[in-house]
Amino acid sequence: AAVRAKSPAIIQVSEAAIKYMGLKPVTHIVSTVAKNVAAKVPIALHLDHGKSLDSVFECINSGFTSVHIDASDLPLDENIALTRRVVEIGHKKKVWVQGEVGSVVGVHSGKNGRFIIPKAKLEEVIKFVKETEVDTIAAAVGTAHGIHRNEDIDFVLLRGIKSKVKRPFVLHGASGISDKKIKKAIKAGVNIINIGTDIKRAFSKTLIQNCLKNRKETDPRNLMGPTIKAVEEVVFNKMKLFGSAGQIRVAELEI
Image (cartoon, rainbow, N blue to C red; front, side, top):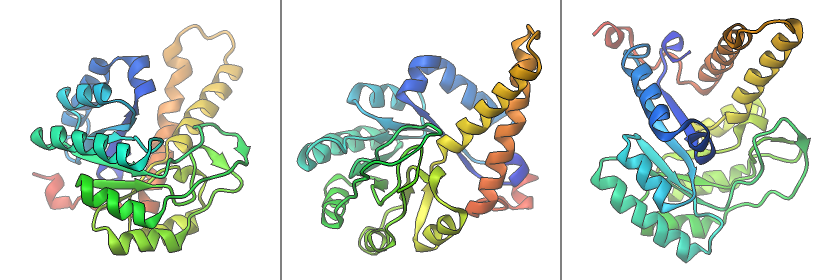
């Protein structure tokens, strides 16, 4: 999708994904694909919502491009201390570090539920960035992981953060937000957008449908093959929506 859209891409994996696949397989698969299949577009490998110093440190040493230390469920001073330590380690390896203020709640499911969605405090985000020197900042601005009826974007808070904090802003939990509001968020200064649920839903829905249609199939490759195209289409359309499509010039592709 990235090559087709002429777009940079960030491949994100969680601690759960690493536990499922193994750290070395994840790193080797992404790096191999980036160097061969997608050699003409920039591909980053990112740890999403790393919770412990150990897991973040392992990813840094394994060649990840950037890491997210998510200590947002801790008191602010502890969050700052842990994040600052990761920044010190990451910057020695020239790895970008993302920090988070105001925990982005929810789970990556297709359930259209409703629950209380907390928001970050502007003054805490400002203090956090100043004292940690993170490269990118994630903050709870009304979105949630998964798709939920009452999630939204607090544009007053988002614009306040962007006006006071000169760092790329990461919007987590964007799968449940309308295209119109995504475009508005980009204009307000959002730089990175996470859409894990949209990708997982496309994969799972296609896989389930294909399995139901081919109940006697015994080759997993035939059952899972169509999911690749389904994910590609979702990602390609998101790249067009986000404005990253076409960012890699033709001249650069021919080098």
